Image 1 (cartoon, protein in one colour):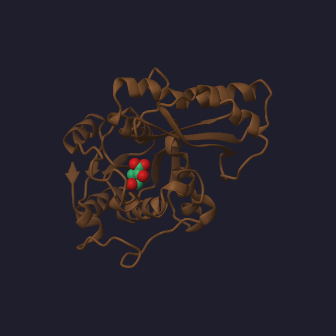
Image 2 (cartoon, rainbow, N blue to C red):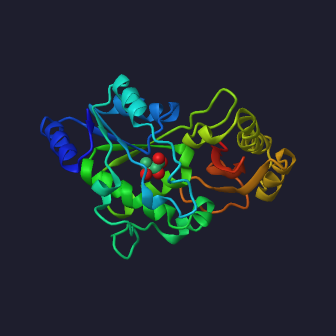
Length: 284
Ligand code: PAF
């Protein structure tokens, strides 16, 4: 069932809860692909009822980012959700979520702001305010749906770490379930932004997973020095790639590592054909 109104979602979910059913939420921005479907499948396995939200959240996009051109494919998304047996697709308008007015800033809206230590690095460094926007909308979705569990992909590793931190710090009674990255056969991590790439761009984009796999291989061969591991990336990069970051950090706390260990995650952001792509891998 496709619902656009907060009140309607609340009423439906309330019925589930009264019947003692376990409710799962899969928050998305739509343009659903196999990565999202893996979250939905996991939610179906874990919960009795599944809500998928489809909302391109304006407050998590910077002024020069792709909010306007972000793919919006609600009809196809709803069809996919129906096929997967999703109970509710919640697709609110920005007005439904944030009310009238277009000045969406922390002058006029209550924001949930994750700690500086977690946002002052990786994607947060160039995407100022992005994680404030993410946490704010996720908190709103949590309050609207009040699910037992919520499902997020490891692809957005910093995002899921920050959401777990928010849930822990604010005592939110929701279990966060993290699902593995889904990749094309080539190794390219699935992303709604892959739609912006040409076939050639997709080939050039393989550099992200190649760099990460090579770092993992080097670690498995015994190299632990982070500078040495990072150095291995340079032979993969050409003038088609604009590397934004390559970091090795603790996979739970995002502390920077000088020496890699089994709890290390390698994370990369790189532009290909002007499209900003991210990927990551656990070294073990
Ligand atoms: O990962 C996403 O698609 C978004 O950041 C999320 C979690 C749906 C919040 O808008």
